[in-house]
Image 1 (cartoon, rainbow, N blue to C red):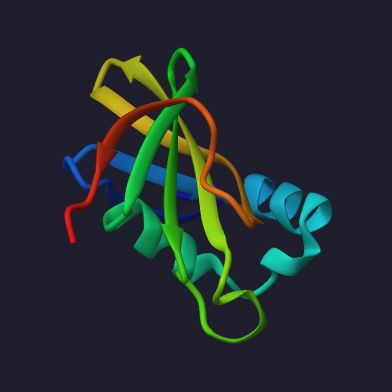
Image 2 (image 1 turned 90 degrees about the vertical axis):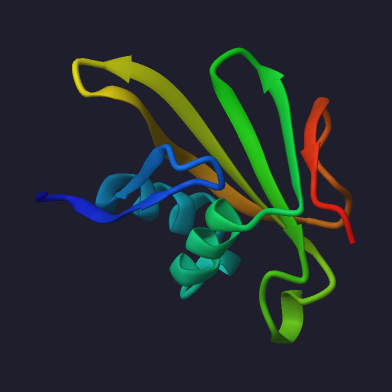
Length: 112
C-alpha cells in the first residue's frame, strides 16, 4: 500500500494503519515524537489504557512506552475507526506524550 507506514492489529484484532502524511503531521505538531513509530505500534498492540472522548475515536495509552527522556510519560495514540466495504478499520490520527493519562470515558485498563 503506497503511503502507509504500517498496518497492524489493535489489541482486539482490528487493523489500524499509520499513513506517511499522518506521520508527517505528528512530527510537525509534536517534534518529540520523531523516531517513535515503533512505540506507536506497540501502544496500539498492547496499551495499558483505552479511553474515548469523541465518538469513533479511541485513545490508546501506555506509561513508559519509550526509553530515555520520555520514559516517565504516557504515550497517547489517537485512532479513528470507520466502516468500509472491508469491515471496520482504524487510522492513527495523532500521537503525543502526556504527563497524565488521557481524559474521557475509560473503556479498558490492563490488569497488573
